[in-house]
Image 1 (cartoon, rainbow, N blue to C red):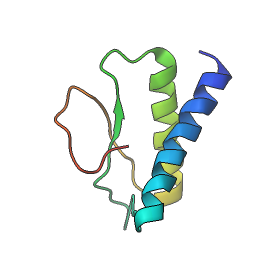
Image 2 (spheres, helix red, strand yellow):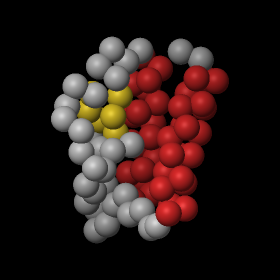
Image 3 (spheres, rainbow, N blue to C red):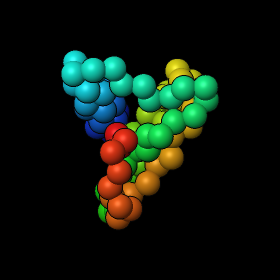
Image 4 (cartoon, rainbow, N blue to C red):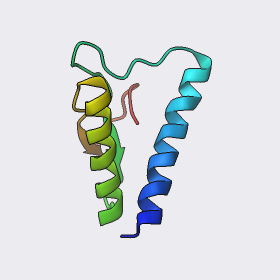
Length: 81
């Protein structure tokens, strides 16, 4: 897993979040709780797992809530990253 892949994954996730903010307020966590979850492919490669875990750690530091990491095999919901 290269550092470049991890950086690209993080930038992609943050860009997706910023896109949602342009149309209205996005609250990922409030009072240590979140309705959001991080989605990875069922056949995710190790760098994708790592990137999801890194995103999870940073979002927990920022918002106080640990977002679950689930695969795309789970039914879709409205609040997904």
